[in-house]
Amino acid sequence: MFRKGSTKKIILFGVLIISTLAVMSYTEFGRVGVSPMESALRDILAPAQGLAMNLGHRLRGLVSFPFTLVNISEENQLMKKRVSELEGKIRVSEELRGENDRLKKLLDFKTGVAPAMGFDVTGAAVIGRDPGNWFGMITINKGSGQGIKVNMTALNDQGLIGRITSVSSNTAEILLITDPRSGVGALVQESRAPGMVKGEASYPGKVRMVNIPLGTELGRGQVVVTSGFGSIYPKGIPIGWIRESGREASGLFISAEVSPFVDFNRLEEVIIITGVRTPAVASNISALPHPWGQGNTDIIGLSPGAIKAGEQGGVINR
Amino acid sequence: MRYFWLIFTLIIALFLQVTLLNFFPVFGVKPDLVLVFVVFNAFLKGSRNGAVVGFLGGLMEDLAVGSYIGMNALALMAAGYLVGLAESKLYKDSPLIVMVLVWLSALFTQFLTYVMLFFMGVYISPGIALFRVALPSATYTAVLVLFFYRRFFRLNQEGLLYDR
Image (cartoon, rainbow over all chains, first blue to last red):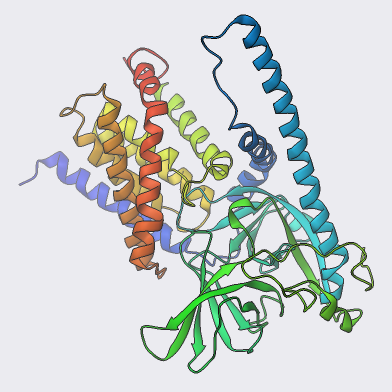
């Protein structure tokens, strides 16, 4: 049926497919180490990636600009040009102010919430994201050289982001809680009902809490926090708030749609927990802002925001 | 030399995909720029070339992800091959035709990825896969054709990508 040459081609093609499938299952997610080649490639690319991400922040601000100045007088053109130049400058300074605000929130977190919860933390910048739409993975600019290890928890002042899945010497990859491969042991803060928070594709606005025991009363707006079971994520980190709930298809459990506190579309900086110890002053937790503590419970569906300067009287860990 | 420039283009596309394009998500998804160029190449050069370049482009995406290496390579190879079959059958100078091809190939590669993930034990509910990932990202990807196709076509006829 086939010509001589084409049989050979088909065999070669079959070998290619099979060997690719073999490599695919060998490199299945969950592999802790990174091969030396991948590691070198990532470290080399890291500075350029950082630069391009930075450019991205700026471009996003500038993209709403008028592009063309056609069919108008020269003077008008000049003036418009000047206006857009000045607008550009304003946007750059707004961008800087935004960055300043974000960093201030992180600093407040580092000196307020983190010591009260007993976390030793370090900050890192996001320098890349998964190229596809199925998974939620980000790359940060710190790695084993800066003390980052696999399975460390990533969060920001708003709540849980994910965990480190692999490190090279100057970069690390974080599996976001929105990734379908992620599972986080969780509790409903109010009723202490346990469950597991799972991601659903990389779609950033929603995760699902499953395996909640039947008979649990769930209400819209209740906060979900990490349970500390399974020992990867420390206990008490806010994940999100419950939107709606219903029985699972099996009928044996309840599942709930949870909106994460973290805006995964706008992740620019993250905090990594490098160590957990007994909190310096235990009573401080109740003074922390919602949902970290009971400081402020007037939000539903809003991000919990930063702890205010002076609000926290605990021991500061620098 | 053509391969050199083509791979260079794919590397730039991938680089943009892991960095800049994250800042312009539409409905929470980003486009697949590498697929766009794989389809362009396959449409202009045929199945064989399309499959080879698709495999290379996909492999680069896989290396950037770091897990399931080979998954995008197989998906893009299949897309490159199928688009290449249309090489001698459709008009080449209409971006609209290419848009439709890119849209179909994007859906096709997402479908293949979904199936492969399923067999690797990653289950994503079909509704979310179709309406939140596959359809929006295929549409977004197809729109990008308008920005790049004419230039790619010209470079292929008489520029850096011209081959004999």
